[in-house]
Amino acid sequence: MKKPHTIFLKTGISVLGWTVALLLFFPILWTVLTSFKTEVDAIAFPPSFLPTQWTLENYFEVQERSEYFTHFLNSVAISVGSTVLGMLLAIPAAWSMAFQPTRATRHVLMWMLSTKMMPAVGALVPIFLIFKTAGLLDTLFGVTFILVIANLPIMVWMLYTYFKEVPADILEAARMDGATTLKELFYVLLPMSLPGVASTMLLNVILAWNEAFWTLSLTAIKAAPLSAFIASYSSPQGLFWAKLSAASTLAIAPILVLGWMSQKQLVRGLTFGAVK
Amino acid sequence: MSGYQMKRAARFALTPSVVLLFIGMIVPLAMTLWLSFQYYNLLNPAEAGFAGVSNYTYFLSDPAFSQAIINTLLLVGGVLAITVIGGILLALLFDQPMWGRGVVRLLVIAPFFVMPTVSALVWKNMLMHPGYGIFAWIAHKLGLPPVEWLSNSPLLSIVMIVAWQWLPFATLIFLTALQSLDTEQQEAARMDGAGPFDRLIYIILPHLGRAVTVVLLMETIFILAIFAEIFVTTSGGPGYASTNLPFLIYVQALLQFDVGAASAGAIIAVVIANAVAIFAIRLAGKNLTA
Image (tube, each protein chain N blue to C red):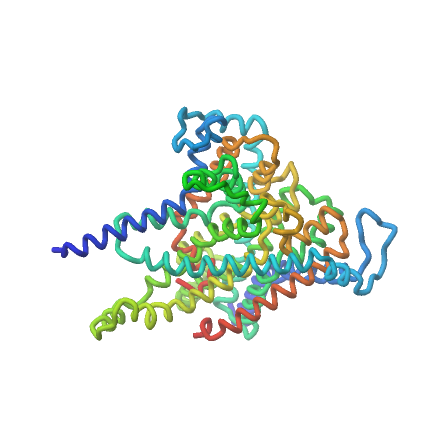
């Protein structure tokens, strides 16, 4: 049986913990609630916590006014596209370095990490000029391509740390049984490191979905994903917070769910395997 | 398959990634370097050619530059201080047994998944708006005049927004590190009569060293490059009060079309980022290798 004072302590800590958590979560909760308010309700002062009249109108109007769904699909295309392309490049690279390391492997890994240290703005001018010349500005292909490059180091690193945990003997055995390298990859390595492969993909989808430097600089109307499109709500004409909230809620909801699903593996990915 | 063929396959598998990263990183960097020594203005194509270091002297002597440097460092320093100290405190709190810890954890980590443009706009409009925002309402309740957050303290406001996004990241990393702490060691320390404070100083904080290093490094990389939050809230203003280096370069290149000066600024930004990263890695060296 628990001592009474442990229960008191646990209650106190729970109250404190929940208070802090709700305060941190409040801006998101507030956005979701505001998305169901009328515009008048949204700027009521003093604020009304719950909508006095629940409405879905904002969600419809956001679509009518601005082709919201097109931007949503752009976000899906860019994040899924860059993830699939990135995996096609990163899986062979990580396999190579994890199972056939050479003297250069360590240096290649460090070099890849160091490319993340370079601020994106260092490459902005030439990339902008190249895109302008090649007609890649405001195209889905262009921005997807850039995001593949931007996130490739993280993908290779993450997969590398997961592949390292698969015993080389097992791959060796498959090879003895006559498996080709591709078969070895598809039937042995990938199934064995499936959680790692899945969380690498999830992290990449999250990073690409939320990316806002390249999308703001390289897209305008046609190819703008949500991260860039939402910025158009920063113009000061009129207060349309309920619509901003509806647009925001739809933009963050899918990624919030993916993030919650993968939070444990995320730590490892974001720290390049240094914290597990 | 022979060992030789295997090695060839491995090299073949690695090449595309290396080549792509090389093209995507080194080539633009080299072009930026080259452009930084050229007169190149998209609005004034007549004036072209070798510029020597004049782009650098132009960029460095621009009063906006020194302000942008100071703002960049304040932004990084402010957010790091808040998130590391706050993150350790929150991780210690959420490591305690409590009811509904799983849900609490989900609530705390959530802000990290919100795209920067959304979090900045939500803070700008619904929290910090001096007329209708929640902060104005709180000030009103306390009998204080509302604060004009983004016009009077633009940099502090951006620090708050960015810290809100990154505090969950730091908390999550520290919490993960805390949970790998050896409970037996803690128990032994308790048996030996170490109080909670002693255990914090001599066991828990040293154990967090590696995690702190990683958080400092990762956040520095990302916060040196903060862009979208400034883009949608203050556009760097009023004046240059909230312009950081990436934003200044963006304005120079894509709004004023001065490619040469923007490139010089970009090279300076790369040098600063690398200097900070090397400094941080040196400082952290023993933590990461241990």
